[in-house]
Image (cartoon, rainbow, N blue to C red; front, side, top):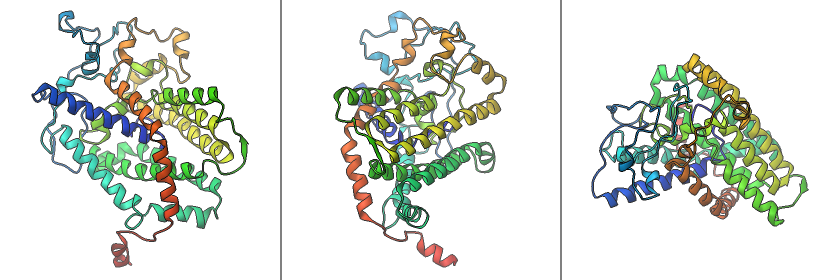
Length: 406
C-alpha cells in the first residue's frame, strides 16, 4: 500500500490482481523478446529482509516529449511497453511524472538485486507470513482477533465490530505512516515498510472478510440491486473508482520494499484532476456499493471508510509538506481535492496530449485487474463464507513462545 495517502482495505485485492497481470505481461514480453532487458532505472522497491542493493542511476523527468518520431512503433500497443511523454510546458516541473513505464528498463535480476526475482521473493515472504500468522486458523491469530471483537467487545453486534475495525485500522495504518520518518531513522526505510505493511494487510483481510460476510446485516433501507440500470451505473462507478489511485501505487517494487521507499511528489496524471485520488475513488466505491446493498451495516462501513480517507487528505498534505516543503505548496496551489476544481478555476492547465498520461501500462493493467476483481466476487464470497463457518481455532503458531515467556 502507498504511504503518501491511505489505501482502502477494500481496494487491496483488486490492486494485487492488477499487478499480478502486470507481472504476467512482463513475463510474456520477456519470452517474446528472447533477451534480458537492459538493467536501468525506474522506481524499483527494496526488500529489508534481503541483501543490500546497489541502485542504478535514475534519469530526470522531461519537460517535453523528446522521442524521435521514427523510433515510435506503428503498433498501437507499443504505448503500453514504452510510455509516451506529454507536453509539460505549463507544469512547474517540481514533481514527478506518474505512471511512466519502459519495458526495456525492466530486468529480472538475481535474488537480492532490484529486479523482479527479488520482488517475487519479497512478496512471497510477506504473504506467507500473513497466511501463517494471521489467515490460516490453526496457525494464525486472525480468527482469535475477530472473535475477540465480536464476542468480548461487540457481544455479537456486527455494527460494533465494523465500527471497531473502522477505528483500529486507521490508527494502525495512518499511525504507522505518520511515524515513518522516525521509524526509518531507527530501522531503515525498507524494514519500516515491512513493519507498516504487515499489520495493514492483516487488518485489511479481516475487515474485508467480515464486511463480505455481514454486508446484508442490520436494517434493510432499500433493495434496488435488481434494477438493471442501477446495477450498470454502480458497476461503472465502481470500475472508475479504481482508476483514482495515488500514483505511488504504480511503483510496485517500492510497495514491496525491493527498493528504498520514498515519499513521492507527483505532478501529472490523475493528480491534475484531484490531489487526493484515493479519497475520491473511495467515495465512488462506497457510493456504488451502498447503492447495491442498502443496509445499515453497509452504510456504517462506507461512512467509516470515507471518513478515514477524508482524514488522510489532511494527513497526506501534512506529510508531503514536511517532506517537500515549498515545492509541495506550489503544486498544492495548482491542484485541488475536489475533482476538476483546479481545472475549471484555471489553476491547472491540462496538456493538449493529456491522454498520454492516462494511457500507460500501470493504469491500463489496473483497469483490467478491476474487471477481474468483479468476476472474482463469487470466489470472494465463498472464501468469506468459509472463513465465517470455520469458527474459532484458538491460539496459533507462536503459542509456545508466549507460554515460555509467561
